[in-house]
Amino acid sequence: MIIETESLAKRYGRTDALVDLTMRVEPGEVFGFLGPNGAGKTTAVKLFLGLARPTRGGGTVLGAPLGDRAARRRIGYLPELFRYQPWLRAREVLELHGRLIGGGVDRSRKAIDRVLEDVGLGHRAADLVGGFSKGMQQRLGLAVALLGAPALVVLDEPTSALDPVGRADVRAIIRRARDAGTTVFLNSHLLTEVERVCDRVAIVDRGRVLAEGRLDDLLGAAAVRIRATDVPSDAMAALERFGRVAASDDGWLTISGIASSEIPDAVATIVAAGGRILAVDPGRATLEDRYFELIGGHGEGHAARGAR
Image (cartoon, rainbow, N blue to C red; front, side, top):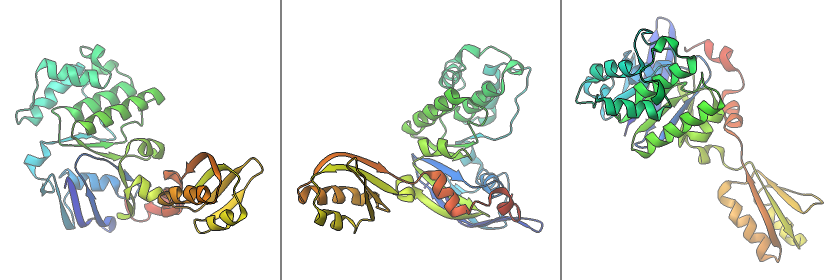
């Protein structure tokens, strides 16, 4: 297991930042960590990385106790707020971080140029960081996080400063890292980005996991639209066992509340009754729908009473 926690809690004075965080991140996946501002996400990341100590509970990262120094060498990290020395060149930033990591990390010019190329900064390797835009700074931060092919990469809002093209590039970078065997832990409030790139997600509030699992399992199918002809009335009645059925004049049947696993059975029911299937349009709730269902739409004010 890449990350595993059990009843992890952190208290700052009278404020509970984390209450009972129990979760697992599996090898080789992109894991989305979601919640409103103040839900305890940043505190959890600090505990994973050994930047803070838990008040109670515990866990492991890369099979070692939280904060283990050897394990930390195998983790790449992009914090939400970061600054690099403006008088350094992009390549020099990576050389510095390579020395800080140590442990046999390949710090050759070829390796550094390769990771800069991966994040779209290959042509700016010799440029001073002080002349970089915010989006270019974000790409440089990604390069630092990916340096040395870490086993785990923790990304805190990696697309917050990027335009749509840049966000698409970051999604491609994350997928390539996953395909190369790196586990990616993505802390983000951009739900559409998470939905596009993550394999599994956890939705947290006040330091507790409200839901965790694969996106398909969490979202399911809210409805399916089936265009069919020659559907007898008894088949329409049989479809009611899958959910609420509505028919339109243009030949579309809509079944609301159906589970994704039951869609093939609904289609088979129509075919068995003599109907002809012309099209199937499966739909499901969005991650935003599920998020607000769990959080309750209270946002920052809801979470600010407890965590940070």
